[in-house]
Image (tube, helix red, strand yellow):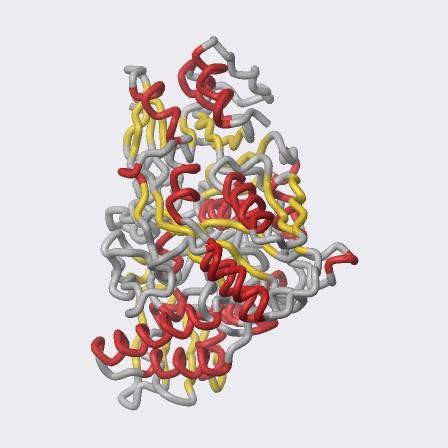
Length: 531
């Protein structure tokens, strides 16, 4: 892979975009060529939190409810709902014209099966599942959610905007347990684009075509809410791992849209009158270092605290923002800075970091026995790769027995799901980032919640954390929820399930022949058209 320090030189030297494959396309078809953040290797948005799979999910499936750009919840596939006087029963009605890509109608039974499957795997979903007494089909177009106690955030849960999104799938597909991923041959969508499985080539291309039987809502689109009108017959994802090649392809017009523009390439692209640099995701991205809590040495909280004390957020952030402080924020928080809960605890345990002397003292106190630490790290994901390299160098300075295993992102995503010991193909640390919208409150925040084996990779378990979360879900006022959120933040910095690495922003780039691109929590395919 081309290193960051040589990238600009290669592009300036005239690196040309590799010729993109040109499959047979019907005359008059309109085509959008898009470069995704990474290779699409997993096709089930419920069994993985990989953002590239979530983004593909928005093409293929739709949701009952959705968030707009102001984080307000709106009906999407739902026409609306009614709530009983005791708030222990919600009846949701589907809107007219909902159809799966195999031609079958979307029914209440499909929605119930999809919610159940999502709720067995997602943090917010697990909270919902704990209070559901039963689901009852009232008709093909309506169903009732009967609750053990009031759950005022039910619509908000079903509008969860990112990792994992409660997409609606056919009942026979959603009946498969969430522990078993659906295969490429099982993809039957409910959304505005059909996934063309026969044209998929891993590491090269994924293809979507407009689903002509999809009925958009009449409202103006706002993020994932409103009318999802797709204006292209065909959308091709072209996987280009090398940023220099992607930049050249965008400049030459070989591609129309590059999802994540490497920061040090922005000046080059901005100077091209045919390229527009868009804001991208306005909620930003939260970098994080995730531990495997199942095995030594990170089953020991003292070792986890030692790593936290050794972290220099500025180093991580500068590495993925081309050393531009305007593109990142120091974030000693498990929630994005600028949001309700994004306030560092007082005292701030990372205030003096990096403090290698204090970290070494904790390692000595923990009686570290030289257990091997394996960092799994992607070589083809420029906004993640530097994180692993920095952590590796830091742990070496601490005298830890550490190995950096570098592969493609697809392999990292697959390996991080392994609960096996290190000597059987397991792992100790991986790095990633989350869209800020994925972490904006306690109920949706997998890097903080202590759900153990039912939770996010790394499997942090904490009954006190989950008790606080249960209190947050039923707190009567925003003030009460804010106080509980602060306690969860403080407990997180004691237990260190994850180390926050900072909050940063990645721009998007597209040809000036495109209009209607929505700067949102995902690169949505609707509303975009050729000028």
